[in-house]
Length: 452
Image (cartoon, rainbow, N blue to C red; front, side):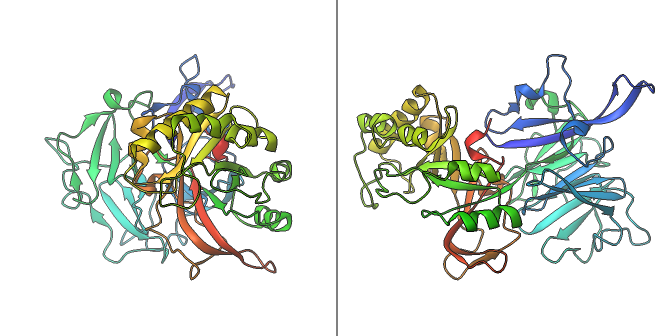
């Protein structure tokens, strides 16, 4: 259910007096299904137009896109860039590249355009123009010394069998140690750790990317929406302040009392208030756990059904809180690998019962167990915790803007959401007091309960 957006230039007759015009269209690609979403392929076979869905972006000529990891995406068109705020759902700044992207220029002149760019996931971004590229330090906000360099000789294996690559149309880091680079109707898979293209590339886009543009793939990007979660409800005033004054878009919503979380934590009667502000939610149910973990440990298939439809079941609690049918409910699995036979039976039964009751399933789990759980049942949306890349604990304080990186970078490409920091401190805009402890998250959509 992770979603990646791809852009493309085309010629269309939109019924205007000028006849056929050049426009930018886009499609949304589902990483889990490995195909473009069907609703982005209208019956007439035309993709959606940027002008109708991306407020403030140019109607044509989009060259590249770079997710900054804080709820902002930078789109490039010619020698200008457009900063898109994912929470506001609109462009909030447009300016020339020159003077704003420090060091992103030729030795003797300003840069005329960016062909492609990619967030490498390590604080660096790569931006391409023709057969050269720059490495950009996202923390220092400047190109690293010694750039630009040529693609040839530095991106090992990024070439055709008989010639060098003259330019890159688009590039995206898939989050699993691989990046994909596109040119014309071809693409390459690049191994980030080995710093080289995998064997047997290039391949044809049309043979491997179902529903995607067959050539001219531009500006691939996954959006990141910043989220938070904590057991206790922070209070109406705090949630109002965070919604109005930060880039945080969604919150965990604890369904209680649950088997391994037996008290009311203050969330259950706050849905209408939160929705009224605009919050997205991730309804989370702390069910049965493996032995040795705090909580209840009745890991049977029969208990899986009971923990959905019983008096303290997930669907019962969700309906009581006002969460509508069809929403995603997340089962909280606190332990890492291995997945025991008993947990597997409970998980499969719980997932099936949720779907039988007219809701959709999700699972919150370790990034190390996600693939095993997916092999048992691949219907749930995955919200993984992977806390090795951000600061954690009571010594870690986060301030606006809060992290909202692409969930691809969790190292689980099919994850829809990523918990990236635990038990940290959230310092809201003044004069509000710090909220502690707080976990920080990111999702590929603004509402984790309504992922398509």
